[in-house]
Image (cartoon, rainbow, N blue to C red):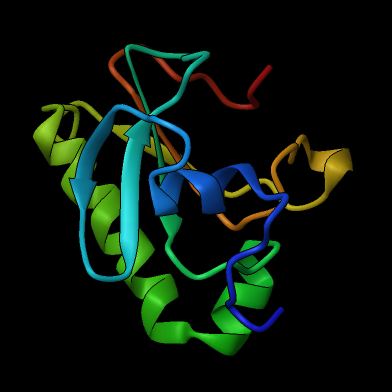
Length: 119
């Protein structure tokens, strides 16, 4: 949980450019890219460049970078013009919650009705 890149992490490889992604935004601390299996017209992942396994560990170690992820999620929504109609920011934490890549990331979903509860 040091924030250092992990050799076996898919998202660390996207950050380094070793794996291609459709990047929509990038800052000094974050990368936002389109999900390869979108669940809504807008489905973008916003990740910190630093590796932390989940949102809680990121927030504990790097609260400013956690805030950067949220700020970029809002910028993604504005860029895709779903900020006026509504969007969802989701952090899945743990395999039981559906997390499959253990690098903190936010899903930004919008562009269609998003009923609650999800599913």
